Amino acid sequence: MNSMKVNKLAAACLLAGIIAMTSGFVTRLIHPAAPVEHHGDSHGDHKRVLGAYAKASAAPETASAEPAGPEAVTPLLASADIEAGKKVFKKCQSCHNADKGGANKTGPALYGVVGNDIASHEGFKYSSALDGVAGNWTYDALNQFLYKPKAYVKGTKMVFAGLKKTADRASVIAYLRAQDDSPEPLP
Image 1 (spheres, rainbow, N blue to C red):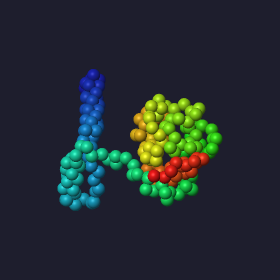
Image 2: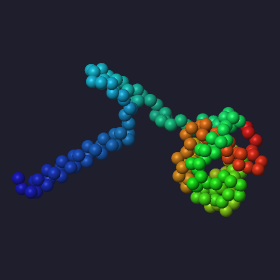
Image 3: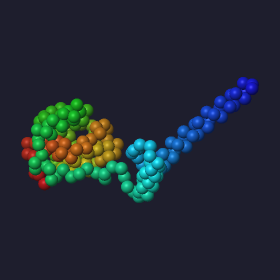
Image 4: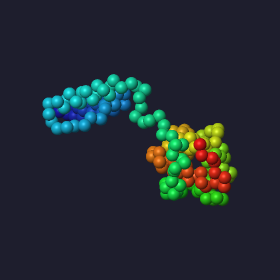
């Protein structure tokens, strides 16, 4: 075989591999397979796999993997642990300050934030996304934002992933509420 035929054969093999990988990737994007537990090598395994795949295929397309939003924290606020909130807030301290008269850091100082207008702290340059949000930091708004900041305010510069545990969000909100000369009344 001459070198030209070897090159063509190698190119054809590479192209076939790329097409196979790409089609597999596109197929998984269009129709992801359900996760299936493997329980040994019995002959019934293929039935479990096919059954799980059929159930995943039959799921309505409107169903999402994540809940629509966070669980409400208002029922927990009256009994929330402020000291626990102070501990959880340590995750926030690299960017935020909650002390009275505290300076802005990468993020705004948060003293008196509960009940305050959104994106209103003097002397802090907010992202245009957060600056465009109307309203104030109600208990519900803080809960939504702390759960997943980038989902609550699309385009925010805040890179924090959020607090998934409801008790942690309630404790942080209770802690922030306590960081005020006249705390916002509990709901």
